[in-house]
Image (cartoon, rainbow, N blue to C red):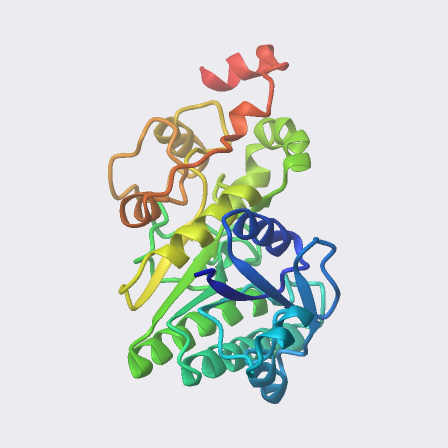
Length: 308
């Protein structure tokens, strides 16, 4: 039987790639957003997620007009994926960013849990690690960044994601359901790889992203793997690709660019400082879109200098 997935924020940068991947995997998807998604076969229900009544209604609606042919009212979906959010600071005033992200996430998790949806996935963020939108040049407390890190953001967006993780943990405990929070790294679409030569030439510009990234297509696969995995209760997963955005081996690179940050374990040769070890070991994630496949080494002279 086809799994029915309600996906919030599917019209956004991350959501549209994830939905495309899920549809290709055979899922039926309903998109909840404030603007339509231009993708064949996926209906968008315009929904204000800060309104709990709209959320409860949206989770018990037909996925499209064909649903009316079934002869019975729609039931709750098999899973809910919640990506909708004000996506960063400086997009809306801080109080609106915090309140919209926290209330919408509470509403989605509450409705899904009370309707008996067995799997809920929410988008958390690399910003919870406290450096991305920090004031000034702030060091990480330790590297690599793993899911047991004492997250400590100082901005409204990162703080909203921290609160959302706690909301998910509370509902998972109360309703004995699976809720997985994805700490999504800097999202890279295929056309963004043109920017990587500048990233590599200017390492300081990538510190806020821990010199890590997630390809939008690989993120879709991570969502799929989360939907397939059962029985883990509340979990946090870093959603990130395998390798550091540098040609220098990771240990050498970190010794040069953040010498005061403790390194807590041996690192793979080019392992991303925001580690994806958990999604590889627990979910079986295998990346398909390593940045080196798309970035040609046209800058051999400065690459050699960086590698010395």
